[in-house]
Image 1 (tube, helix red, strand yellow):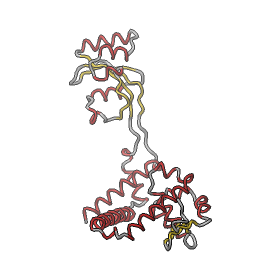
Image 2: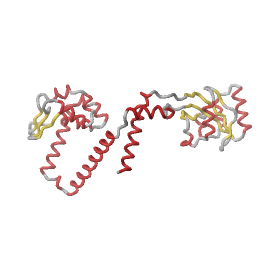
Image 3: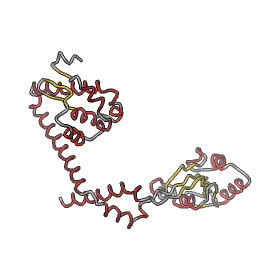
Image 4: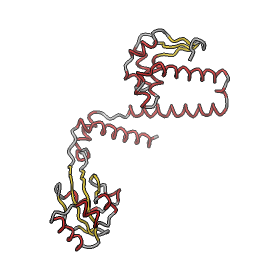
Length: 277
């Protein structure tokens, strides 16, 4: 792009300024970018379009709105990104010169965008206003420690047959050294037979959303690693269940649970405020 021909000036120090700017500033939110500029004496101008100046904060805000992948490459592509920003500003200037911004449809769209921006800003403000105190966060943790644990998980498989006799015959074959997965492929009438009866890894209580009979999940958690069950009956048939690995959940330390507690309490306060509105 011929910047000189278009009446655009890129300051000689522009790319030096960009190169020395910390990567973190590129990923910063708009408010943080503005704060960064205010912290520097004067405004760091990196380009001018006639009377319009493009500041480092403008550049940071533009980068912050890029998709994640492009933003991660910002440091290596600063000239191209600055050129893209300038192109966009030129198009906007052209639109204003042609009075496109005065068209009714455009004015309506701009009003809608303004409302959306105000809504987001109001939500951010309310979230800050109703942020829980450290005392409230600690009280929630101490009073409800059972809520702040890692999940119990189990990796298991099963074979489903039509009768208790078939289930006991299967157990006899396992006791003789039979391979559980191969017997599942041969004898099971469950959908998992093609996977050797594998149920994958599941968290405690997951049966509520998967349709797996509760008795099967209960059995998997009752077994030791590497063992299989006696014949177990469900509404679908008779099962032999094998637990490959069982990992019991652990209590989270306050430092591990703190962020989720803060978010939970803040959301509750925010929701309550909306009800009042």
